[in-house]
Image (cartoon, rainbow over all chains, first blue to last red; front, side, top):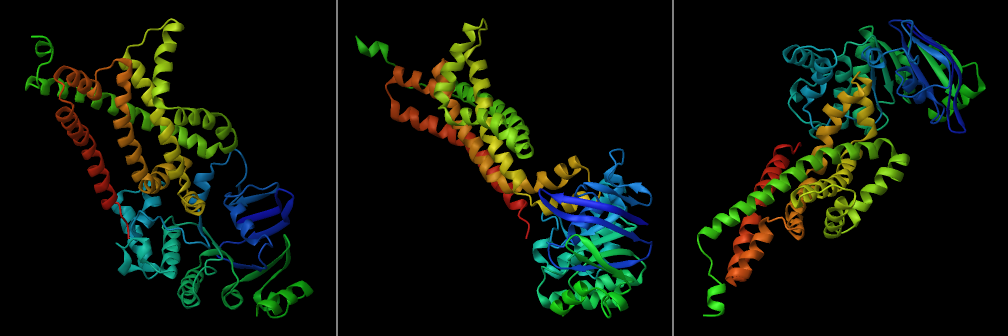
Length: 240
Length: 220
């Protein structure tokens, strides 16, 4: 369970998170929608402590992610993250990209790590790209590689930060299909997305972020189909 | 009589003298390049993490080493130590100055290498649970090294040739040896060609090796 309690965060004078409360249950898929700059990506970065917070707390299975005493590297093993910009390790093949962390972080043998990597590459449909360098992969394939790389750590939670935003339109589908597959497998996911259709179809709950607060939170049937808040309605009217 | 007895032409044994001198050039260069590269990487790392403070202090110091002509550094340094009670041999003084000089050049290269790795790539590595040093070792180092290997090669070859300046302290390396022979034999053309070939054969392996690594590491 991820518990986010009254989290605030500033970038200089700009307050990007103004008291966020959110509980993510095991097995739940939550989509986070909202305009650019509403704080949704920052929220994700705070969960695995890639960004610091100014007040509040974030508990991952009861462990305070921002406590000084917390071993953040151990905590992060359990939280996979996929980013908007492609960030495959360019000097490693697809297989090495995926096997690196299981090998050096989890201490698996090379053979074991490779086995895990092959399985995860197959999982995301990249079995035929095992020995390719990332520069030979399309954007959609690179994003699926990034998903495989995160899954190889066998995390309890997956964070997705606008993973389709930098893709050409024809490549969006294959990445969303991979996310759908994961949701069907019961992976706990927090998905920051602009794909409203995806959020409606796949999520258990949808959070609408507006200027650093969660303006509306509920099942997609409510937030997307029949929002209570005027701000949510306005946003949805614009993106649809 | 007269001048004929003072000057003697180039003899085969002079080769031995030149080879020995080439060995000294090689020794002082290898020391300067290897130790200077290690320090340069550390300095480059400091510059990349402590941008404001680093640039103000270390950066300024390194700029001095990079900007003041090596010849002046050598003479100042060599003459400074006797003043405070140490006597350094030309070899020691020359090596120390070359190490500082090399590390100031490598620091800029190393910093460039570290900064060549996109922030998002490092974040991705950290999000997988890699520690700061694992990220440095497995992500930043290999990507950065590939990015700046040509620049580093340029620095290394430059230092090899600049090591000739240590001759002003009286250290008999390749250039100094050639001057001695030229004075004796009065055959500057021949000797400079021979010495040029020596320098080339010291440099060539470095540029071949790094060119090979560049090809091997070319990933696409």
